[in-house]
Image (cartoon, rainbow, N blue to C red; front, side, top):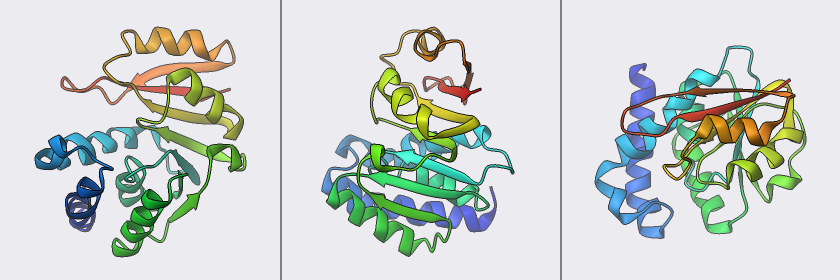
Length: 189
């Protein structure tokens, strides 16, 4: 991680602490561990990106996790943060402005209103794997990937993804950490 990226991510962590936690966008219990629990956790998805990726959508962006940390470390990719709640949209707009993220657009509204054409779609605490894939699949380019942050409740992330995906989808697990469930990556073929 470059020093300038670290500085931006630290600024984002302060914004989360000062604005997102009091607003209820991030749990009070996470206030003392924002860096590990949210920033570093979000960055696990960076390995799903390539230099050829031009457009990424973050579904139900909430407090900008994982979209904002990923936009900081992947400046060559344009990120669309999709959020339907007005208060969260206002926080996202503030964060994008304060971090001077020229590669980020905050899109108020529903996922169903997004146009197809994403190379990567991220979903963290958005919906079940089945609902995420149903929402993401028509928005992905051929070869595009959904990166789903599997919660602890998903006993067999790879098996469930294969069950949901069908034959036209490649499934793999990435971003493995001992302290967190893996990320499920589903590639539209």
